[in-house]
Amino acid sequence: MSSFALRAARSAASRAPRAAAKAVAKPAQAAAYSMLARGAAAASAAPRAAVMATRGVKTLNFAGTDEVVYERSDWPLAKLQDYFKNDTLALIGYGSQGHGQGLNARDNGLNVLVGVREGGESWKQAIEDGWVPGKTLFPIEEAINRGTIIMNLLSDAAQSQTWPTIAPLITKGKTLYFSHGFSVVYKDDTHVIPPKDVDVILVAPKGSGRTVRTLFKEGRGINSSIAVWQDVTGKAKEKATALGVAVGSGYMYETTFEKEVYSDLYGERGILMGGIQGLFLAQYKVLRKNGHTPSEAFNETVEEATQSLYPLIGQYGMDYMFNACSTTARRGALDWAKVFEETNLPVFERLYESVKNGSETRRSLEFNGRSTYREDLAKELKEIDEQEIWRAGKVVRSLRPDHQS
Image (cartoon, rainbow, N blue to C red; front, side, top):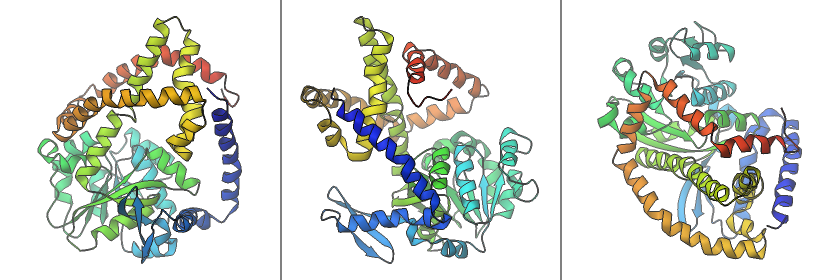
């Protein structure tokens, strides 16, 4: 493998701290709201971008398909605060998304309350993050009663379990907000059926709540999808877009509740998490079976992928990564890519159908609703942690020049 790929990845990494330093040096609002606008301006100059702007709404051509994109530059901070001046966001649940979205909305100057079980771990975490009992932190029922926009960010299983208690509190005039289409789309399994007299909207950040928070603090912003399930007021989409900016989105694209949940469950089980673990492990096992040492097997399976090649794909695209490697590597990759595509296509088709027909939903609700859920999950994660590939990886990571104990 050519060392050019590694040099390019390191060069990109070395530029990141300088870019971050420049962003920090700017006023907070400029850092939070200017970067995407500059990106849109650059895109408009490119011949293939085909950008059309109407009242801040952008229509972009994605590989031959026009899609509408909403940007945070459409919602300057003063406009955002004025839009929600009469609203109270009641954020129910303080897990990963609750933490990130809640703190971002609070930092954007909106009136935010957190509702969780009093005295529980989430309650304690919220206090550590500056939420004040009796002022901005309440039991779930009281938070909902005080809120006008109810942001249901409980886990999928918890949304189903608590819905009989929560549903009567979602009264006319409130807005019901989700960050995942799971509960509403699979209503036959979750029994979550929104009232008919409220707007029901979705803002789904494409990343963990921790990433939502980190990118916001860096002045960047995560990409999110928005959707409308029910529009009673005629302003549901506008509200979803504004809330997307409020919770830390850099740009948003339209989808539906169904497509959001199908793509999300499919991606997590596929190449984002389940598929990548399976492929890593299979390649590692074959290398070990053929006499390669753990360090060599890990380096050729995980380390080179994550530290050298994947960053190039993320920054420049697959063709750039191929061109950054040796002629021998390119030839083999091009030939075997077709084999992997043909071999895995039936697996991915089976996976999508399992998501669409609700099998994955029922599996998730059953497992995540167990009283022994945390113990059972910890056992499975421990099994992964103890696999030789990841034990070898801990040693390899310790050898990185930037490793910190």
